[in-house]
Image (tube, rainbow, N blue to C red):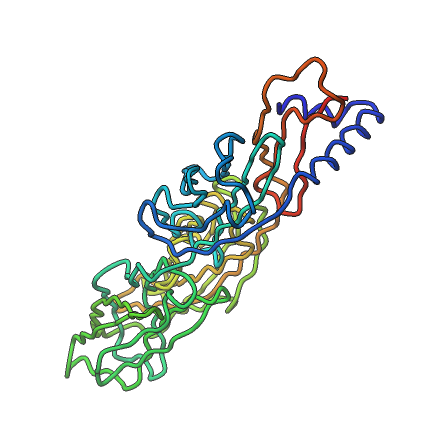
Length: 392
């Protein structure tokens, strides 16, 4: 079937006209589109809707007319009871597995019935439930801070991750009671939040060498879920100067699907100290998202940022890389900068066509225009026409 359709791109002009006319004919077969909404995690057999009733079909003829649904998903999440026309959950749906963190999640189905051939489009929206609490990558964070740090100094904290979306996603952070630190909560361009520890009152190493406090992350679900991590602060002496980046914000452009090892940008920070106190090393800062660490790497000695994974424009068109530089002396304090990487789109996606219907054997006296088979590009927008082959 796919081979026959592909020839339409190089047959004579008259053949192209016939193909276009056949496509126009099949558009009339797509009679309606309906939509359902269900929460994720429903058990097998859960009711979705009476699809036969909603489409105005005769339930007693569903089997005879070979009623069936076709899905582009890898699993058959939904099924139809041909005795009563009810669409039900065939396999438990995990929204995070199906759509990751996309704000909207749909299962696109096509209903096919024969004698005569009719096609219906069905969209099932999968609603998020608050089934995931915020979690930190580690249960304890250790931060070294020199006692000479000035009030107002900021220290990035590891971000919590929440697989849920919308109001069920990460909402805020809270810091346990203490005498020296407060929280500064910021929002990234994509709406996600991260926290910075801010020194509010000066530290005195001779008075207290360590400080411990609890950091809590909350989501916005009902009931609310939370996760915690222990922050341990070690107060240090030393180091007169800290590294200074030549830019507070870097910007670079990168073509999607760039090969692993491609240089994105080279960071540059200098330290006025000598010896190991002036030797600068680079790394991602604490609140760099896990996804960024999977896609990019930073050389600790040269500051070169290179491609580590597969960068896909369709998943994100810009990445925020939070980086830090520190010297190699005792009591080193990290300084921070940000790199915005704009991803350039390339034409790397092809339509996906599947066979949705094949009729019974064609009679020798079948009239011109009889539909033999139909296909549809399930990943294309719903307004895209279906295609078919028919007798001339």
